[in-house]
Length: 356
Image (tube, rainbow, N blue to C red; front, side, top):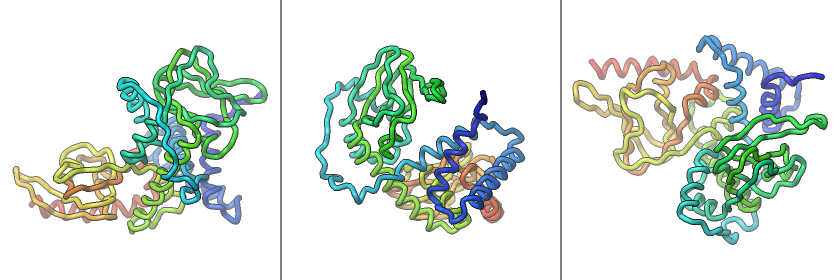
């Protein structure tokens, strides 16, 4: 009898994804460098925070891994039907549609969709009611649908050497079934309903055509944006890919506030499209200190110093911003931290002059 160490499975899965992406000539050197860098990052977090939560880090790895594989095996340009495919519509009541819209908000796969794509996916999803002890999917079976949980409790069960083992549980939120649809592989686990519940299902064909295509296009767009930012030249190729997958697009109208001076810092931002103006307020007077355009970034100062926002940023016309939430910022931009700290000194000098 033996027990798999906590965090081993997720760590190895993340390493495998990086290995497949990079395709190094020497696997052993790559593995040594990969885990050395991971250890240094763990030590940095331990020194910076004084406490290290391994469960939280494993969760981050799982999140990064799920994001980074979301478009690996699907090539939108090779899709013969593409946007000309016949749209599937399953009629829904207004109440059903409202519940569905709430349910999909928790799924990272939907974040890359524009408004029209979201409507098409919601139209194509259908409701599935499940009973207690019903197997929604079975380990080893072919994948047919992707599922989003409306409500209910569901156990994730994996067969380990002939013994079923419950490895995790979903309660009233979450999604599952995407990996088998992405990679044409058998189901990796069994999902069993512990209670009665309701799921929203999306068929394999629509899932691949819309969700994976959108994720692939989003990744390509953000990789091009990241490549234009000089500061991020310190990142390895796979780190830039993970960064692209972690970005979330936000849209703002003319004069809408993106960040507010004095607020807590919760994200780091890139200008994706449009312009922004940077405003510093002192003695009830506002002064514009900078204009930002595509490829510029802001919001890092407060995250590096763990302080309040030093300025406000407003949209100029219709503006799209790519946001990186604080947890991903600390995890993914470690290699760029020295550059950020050098820039921080320059920002502080400018701020001091303005306030004086």
